[in-house]
Image 1 (cartoon, rainbow over the protein chains, first blue to last red):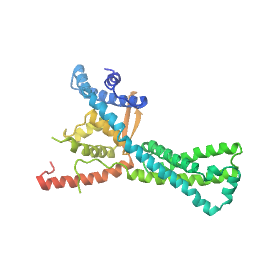
Image 2: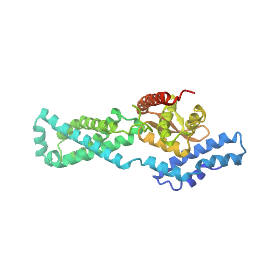
Image 3: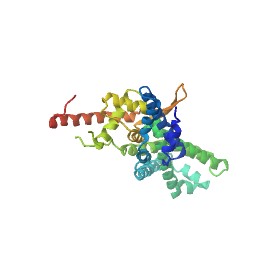
Length: 220
Length: 110
């Protein structure tokens, strides 16, 4: 039995992908060749079956090019989409806070300000943090989407992950006394629905902008 | 001769339709499409796997490794809920397309 993995790896030498991903592709294609060999072997001598199975890799240059294109399909559009939807996520999460503060009033903000946290609470840094957090949340959504499926649950999971990271960060400030614990409690309580809502808001245009099935001819 | 352009759109439909029946690995998928189409549709490695990877990136299919009792590792693909949502309008559009061809050129069911 030929070493299909080595034969495949040799022919896909020009495939430049992250090592782990490249290994996956090589493994998958070598299994395909082995299956083809086993099928052909039922009717052909071993040498001929091997030759015909290997002929599937005859145009390995085309295969390498097509796989690379598929893996990096429209990277610019993908990045733009990710950033724009991430900004939506961050903006919604940011605006959710003032909406809640309108109900609970200024004492919370005043207390946080007295504790020296005003720059974090009201300054432009908060906008930047939220927008960066929104982009990260959408990136996470994009990464886990193939595994958990597109939609609200996956978006909520990504928002929850951002909230966990944010809470851990804020907790570290509280532990050294820079943010009062009641401020931490209030902000993290508001933060959870804010980031989940933000992620849902970002995932919605992300899914709307999903590529539609390619068609050779338009049918109306 | 089926042109590349028509194949591209129909290939996605063919793959999703097979995976809607049951999860399959790449070789099974290619064989099934070839057999069920009476040999009219055949995938090469360069057409099957890049398309599967694209569909996976779009969230239409999901691949997962499984280890067989004989130690071989296979990547099995299953259709996602998003893929099922794509499949229904695809079927409808291709149905309209073939009915139009039938009226225009007498292309009918075999």
